[in-house]
Amino acid sequence: MSFFYPQIHSQSHTEQQIITKITQKLTDQIQKNPKLKTKLLNKLSFVEQKIWKNHPKYSLIVSLRNNISEFPHLKKDIPEPNYRSYFIDGETLKQNWLKYYNDYRSENGITELKRDSRLENTAREWANISLERWNISHERNIWDGWYNYPIIEQWFQDRWVKCRVSGRTTSVENTGYHAYYCPDRQDCTKQASKALKDIFDAYVAEKWLSYPANAHYKTTVSPYLNYMWLGISFYDEWNGWIQIYTVAHFCTEFQ
Image (cartoon, rainbow, N blue to C red; front, top):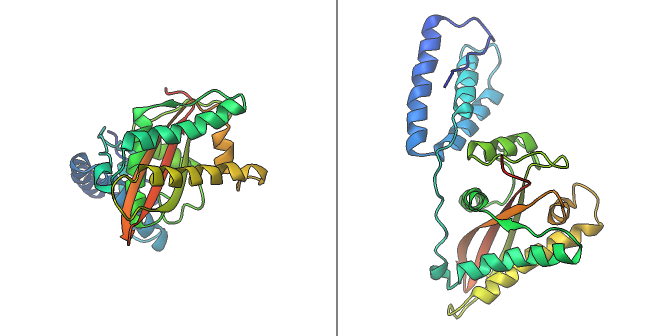
């Protein structure tokens, strides 16, 4: 891995040694805990926005941020949620989600989507992060805006998901949030599936809107997307109500 030294001001050999040593320590920690990369980048980017460019530490912050951003995440399987604890048949729930898409695409003469484990892994990760934040969005950083394509695309590639350009499309992320009621806690698969269907129906209802308000619908019917899978997180709210966070990741063709 080559380290980056920005030419904001002339860095001494000692400064470069310090940057290299800190970067190596941080990358060692990222190897042990891949989620740490995003947290470090968020903190460094935040500090970078707050200090002046002529500040003595600005060059150090920029160097560390760039070096860490070049370090890829380790291939790591993100565990599934414990569906049993929510009295849900997880496989049925996910297959229903795929069926909602493919039934609609078939009705409109569009090729059906295929399931892919790489997308399941990334979708699970972002669903878990969304639950930790108590917020479903696309923002990898707090200042990213509604959908920062270059940052999200890099996030995918850091996780070994690189999609070919097709119809000006590569990878896409759709997010959703809903809640369902299942007080008896015997079999909640039907209620959870209904919540997913409501999310999907909301995407389809965007058909009559203009971009970017119809972004979910455009993804649903895109002929350039061929692969998809779903990540889900649950939160046990109160009195039988369960919050559900959904993340669907799509890809044209894998490189």
